Image (cartoon, rainbow, N blue to C red):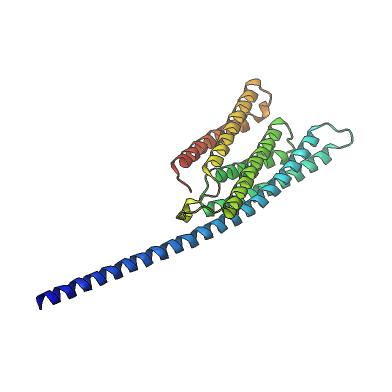
Length: 259
């Protein structure tokens, strides 16, 4: 009787263990399926955001090049254009530059909502700040070298951003066409752009800060723009603050910390 009971207990334990293993296997399968769904959702989200940003940045770049070309034209002496006409054109360019700054702010909101990038938000923030500074200078009819230098920096920044976004889109398409096997990565592990692209962007931002700092310091040394000395000192203070932000962004990229 005892032997029969022990055999029954063993059978029941074996059956219970088998059911537990089956339940665990089903949970693992369900978890893997959920991870795959989340991964696909993240890929689709990244793809949509890249397209939106690419369209916005491309439009901003086109508009910025037009503002720069118009400013270069105004900087060239003209016998057929009155001072009043030149001021009106400079004011128009200032309004266009202000719109570009607004577009940068909208793009910045998109990137910050995503929260997976570091360098792109910093670059967009600098475009917004530079747009405000350039618009203020154009409003008062200043089309000198300092103003044009700011506009040129905005063009360079937008070109680099556009290149990074286009590269990310190509990589996203390649990933969709050639999915890798094995266990899918966690959805949050896929950033908007890869770390290398972000580091390249940070390096470019740093380079522009260095160049502009030297340019402003030289202007102050030469006394070429004495009327603007207070503004140049303020600009240097802003560059110092920008330097801190770049260093913080570089640290965040290196440590994997996003917004």
